[in-house]
Image (cartoon, rainbow, N blue to C red; front, side, top):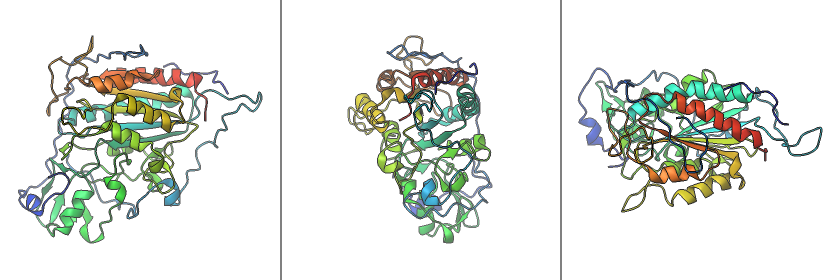
Length: 403
């Protein structure tokens, strides 16, 4: 039924000697730089002309879910949310013709977790509440799924990992490095969890699996053992902040954000027993947001995502039954190669500041979508970009036909 009312708007294998060599400290020493005084936001349009605008480890006392199996979707967890509206049929009950408009939205956030991404991740977390609330208010709907994934498979070594006295270690990304640390006999606890009771899901090492813990080891307590959030999630804004804290660390291979994105919506991940079971819905608009300060390339010996912009586009569209109009893609990337870009043309990623190298392949990918926009990773405030993202989502919903 058409909406008539709108609101304006060495890899992961951490050797025992590495942690044993850590200096005894009183705190994990996670950086907390929150300076966002970089240049004002400048958002450059994709080629299609789509509209656009411009740690310290937290408390880990909460027990993690029993996650020793391969999947942790809503069905396998045995829980179900009853606060959401009944399934839409995609057919207007009065006219019998396919209905248009969004009653459901699936929000997927793909977040680069390289060593240079600290400030950019903080900017995303700061902008999320207004983006999420704005989508719900503008569309007048109460049925969203929200999931955050990293750009790799979680097998790398964090630059904030260290051991404290008394057999305590903080290790990221959790929980795989904790398994290795505990098995090596170097610790009695890891990230506040007793080594004797440590349980690790196979999903912790899968590209595209929703994050259910922060890099510092805090379990995010996503309801019903899911790896994505519903609107009924207690303190959803803070829970997203936990899941989106994917950390900054090196890995044996380059990060693969587009592979993570396409895996996150794949049938294997969303089917019964899959890590993201139930996240992607055929009758929901899919909104993919990715944040990366470098291009996703496998050229010249690089080990980025397999394929290229066309293959990534095809994979997302296939996940939505071949309907490209049911996908919105918003990318925050280095844009120094674009007219009006907010990054310097010769800029490279930086560990201490908002910065990003040109990303022509990711820009090309976004330009293939009717509903898409590129924003500058160098912007001091991501709010204007996401405000425009709300408008793009709204436009997509005007013609969206639930599957």
